[in-house]
Amino acid sequence: MTTQSQSPEPIATRDIPAATVARLPLYHRVLGQLLDTDVATVSSQELAELTGVTSAKVRKDLSHLGSYGVRGVGYDVAYLNYQISRGLGLTNDASVLIVGAGNLGRALASYAGFASRGFRVVGLLDADPGHVDRAVGDIRIAPVADLEAVAVATSPDIGVVATPADAAQDVCDRMVDAGITSILNFAPTVLTVPAHIEVRKVDLGLELQILAFHAQQRRGDAPSNGAGVPADVDVTGLDLRDAETGGSRRGVPA
Amino acid sequence: MTTQSQSPEPIATRDIPAATVARLPLYHRVLGQLLDTDVATVSSQELAELTGVTSAKVRKDLSHLGSYGVRGVGYDVAYLNYQISRGLGLTNDASVLIVGAGNLGRALASYAGFASRGFRVVGLLDADPGHVDRAVGDIRIAPVADLEAVAVATSPDIGVVATPADAAQDVCDRMVDAGITSILNFAPTVLTVPAHIEVRKVDLGLELQILAFHAQQRRGDAPSNGAGVPADVDVTGLDLRDAETGGSRRGVPA
DNA sequence: CATTGTGAAGTGATTCACAGCA
DNA sequence: TGCTGTGAATCACTTCACAATG
Image 1 (cartoon, protein in one colour):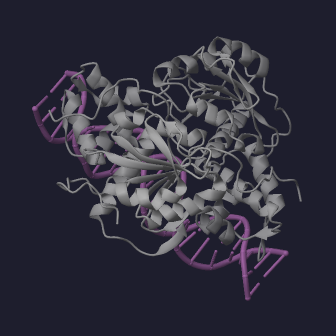
Image 2 (cartoon, rainbow over the protein chains, first blue to last red):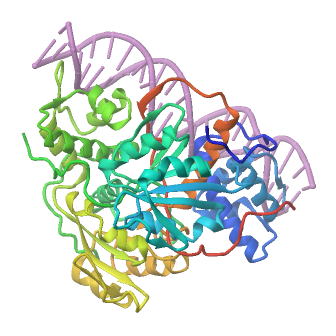
Image 3 (cartoon, chains in turn yellow, orange, green, red):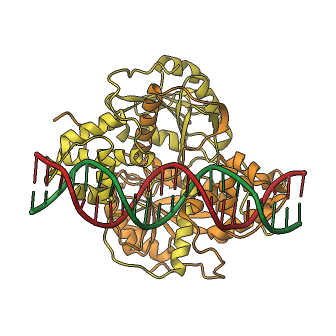
């Protein structure tokens, strides 16, 4: 399946810790910005400040890719950026198939950052005939029935599920059958997939609840220390579009 | 600042591990669905299958809230659901102010799951005069200049940054000045905030790159084991809307 | 001599495995 | 008997701290 366009040199990047992999794209982004401003080298300390992580973490992360730094100097921006690209397998573009052309699906399809980061949207599908054939940017919305055909024609590297929760599992199953092995799920539901398929989920409802919890905690806690340093309480979820699978509200005592 | 509407009984939920807090909303969601289908009790095993986590993790997570299970039986769905709501501080609604009414901001504002999960959108602002005064659902888009006024009038619990990267830090600063202490950032940039402010970020570009990396790894790896179990390779980021801060592409070798 | 790269220590989360209880 | 609640073991990630070095 997945007639991947990739094939070249295997590089030397096995065994990179998941936590590191999750940060590499962040370094990659700021290195790209530094490149634009003609900064030639960065230290782990500077990179740390720009990304909101600690310098020790930066050094350990980068050490998993190899020894690309220069002691006493730092890292060559362009070279490091290239090595991260290689480590992440971004040396050639990845194609993305989006199912669900509601607000979120359309937001994703028209997201300019896609192209600038090497991702190509090869399809945008929707079940609603009212959406079909409308254009989002230069992408025409096709009917979900075309999922298999589009997948065969374009061999997408990544499938994005941007449907309501009750359609998500079905769409996911069809993506898997069509040979897609990496799925990004925005629907507020848990997807069940074969073990060799990777699913990442982005769930807004969960994010908001996590934030709300910490806000509540802070209320009861002491204020806190300093002020002014970058903050990234890590990544997490986002969901979108209409109703949840059920329609329940929060529970009542037994 | 933040004239919080909350005040009541402090509950007994200090010291819940962050990893647990991140999963509680997930349990909460499926418990809500079980409630709708009139399921009276669940075992940790069943809850595990429905949420894609392990049963041991479920039990340990729930034990942080107290001993609400019944040995030999399981958990009362309604009661457990209520306890999680309390633990998460969801017993009263939280208000959300969204800045950025592009595709993503509008998707968020019209997201039905908001209301069903106890979140109220108290404002949707945009810098583009072309967007201002248009309505999204029953919310009217207001100019960003109103940020402070809206914040004073509504004391939002959470601020959502759904602007392009180059406007994000400014909007964030203004939210902080206006007394908002919890921020959800969708812009593909790192926000710098005082230490007592909590920022969570959702970054699509990063998600896609992480998926692309694992896809690449799988290509070189052996296929894998079984098939058919729920999968949630955890939550993470999503960004949106036009250009990144810089316009750079992937690097070239030095 | 500033900064990397990395062993070693520390911290937090997950998994195991079973005693305790309805 | 079946399932929870939890100590103990394990694993993963982070932080420390410093020797190596361009």
